Length: 608
Image (cartoon, rainbow, N blue to C red; front, side, top):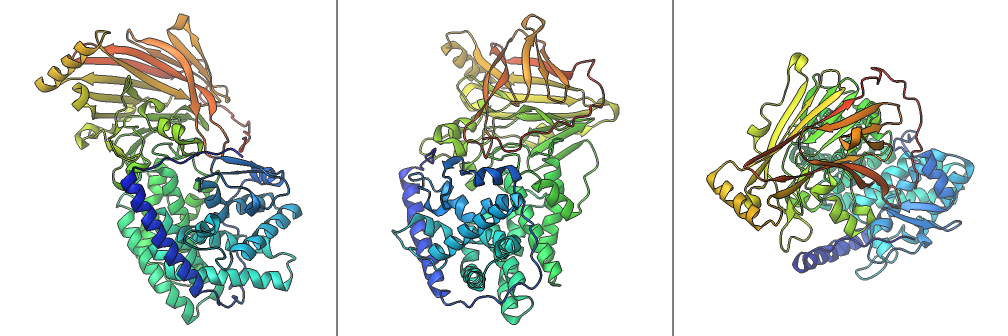
C-alpha cells in the first residue's frame, strides 16, 4: 500500500486540535452508548433509489483487489476492507472506507459478485463497528472515525441509496441487523449531527439525518421530532454558510457541488414524503445552481482551484438536471470569485479574487489571476490541481503560484505561508473590486476581463495585472500580463530589489500548464508552440516580447490516481527592469481547424 503523511499544524494549533478531538470522541462515544438498544426499523416507507453515482471501472478494480481510497492503493484481493492495514498517522483511507463511497462503485458494477462483496463488507462493518465496538478515547482509530457525525451521515445515505442492492437475497437475520444498525446511526445523528464542523461535514450529517428519518419512518411523530430541529439547523446553515451569490467560503467548486448534491437529495426526500421544503433550502439550491454552471468548463468538469478537483463523473450534470435551474444568459459570468468567459466551443475560467481566508486558508492556493481553458470537451490549459492525496510535498507544491497558469516572480508565490501559519495562506494577494469592474461582454468585441493584485507590492513594489480577451467565435484567447511600480514608494522598493539582483532585473515566469492529453511541440524555430488535442483541434501559442519561450515538464494531480501524471507546460521567462513591464501572448486555433468537430472518442475514466 502506498502511504502519504498529512501536513502537521504548528504545536499550539495541533494541541488544540487534539483536545477538541478528544472531546468529540467522548461525546460520540456517549451518543453511541445511548443508542445501543435502538430497535430495528420496520423497513422503508418507499423503495429507495440509487441516487449516488459510482463508476463501473472502479467497481471492477475493487473486485480485482485494487482498492484506491484517498490516494492510497491497497492491493488486497480476497481481503475484507476492514482488514486492510492503514497507513500510519493517515486517516484519509479509513475515512473514505467508513464513508462507504466504494459502495457506489460496486453498485455501478452491479453484478452478483459485486453485490455479494458489498453485502459481506457491510455485514462486517455492522458486526465490528455497528455498536461502536472499540470506540474509546485511545482505542481503534477506524471505529472512532466511523462514528463521527459527518461520516455517519455519508454512510447512512449510501446505505439507503443502495438498500435494494444490499438486501437482495439476504436472510431475515441479516436484514434485521441492517435495519438495527440504521436505527442506531439515525439515533446517533439525532444527538450529534449539529456538532459537526460547519460546512460540508455538517451538511453531510444533517442530510443523512433528514433523509434517513424520512426513508425509515415516514410521517410518524418520532420522525417529526427528529425533522424539526434538523431542518431548522439545515436552514440556518443554508443562510449563513452559502452567501447570496451561491458561494461558500472555501471557494472550492468540488465542495460546493457536494453541498449542492446533498441539498438536492434532502429536497427530493421531503417532496416524496409530502413534507414542506424550507424556503432557505430551496433558495440555497436556486443560488448554487448558476454558480456551479459558471464554474463548469465546456468539458463538463469543474474549475480546479483551491484544492478542488473536477468533480465525480456525472454528478454535476445529474445535480443540475435535478435542480431544473436554467443557465444564466450571457458570455461573461462572475461566481464565487471566478470569472467565466465563454464563446463558441471555448470556456475560460479565471480566479479574480483573493484566496479564501479563515478556515478556508488551510486549503487555499496562491492562484490569483490563474486561468483554465477548455475547447469542447477537451481541456487545454489547466492548473496542476489538488495535491493533498499525494503527500505533504505535493500538497505544498500544488498550492504555489508556479503550479497554476499564471505569472509568478521567480521564487515568490503571489500568496505565501507566514511564519507559524500551520499550512495556512497568511499573506494573501488582494484584489480590489475596481480591478474587475470593466468585466463585460461587448457585442462583437468578445469577452474581456482585467484584474490586478498586490501579491508582490510589499516585497517588490510591483502590482501584477492580467488582461484576457476571448474572441466572439472562441477561437482566440489574447492575454497581456503586466508588472508595474506605480507610486514613489513602490518604485523605491522595486529599485532596491533590482539592485540586489545579480541579473539586473527581477526574473518572472508565466506558465501555461497543459492537460496530459495535449500533444505539444515547439514550432516556427522556437517562436511558437503547437498543441494538438485528441479531438484533432490544433492550437498555437505565440508571444510578442523578448521573453524566452520553452516547453518544460509539469504534473497533473488528479484525485483517484495513485501518482501524478506527467505532462508539459508552456513557459515564458523574462526580467522586469523598468517600472512597467508587459508581455502579450495569444492562444489561437490553427486556421485549418474546422469550426465544428465530431469528438466521439471515449476516454478511460479511471486509470490508476
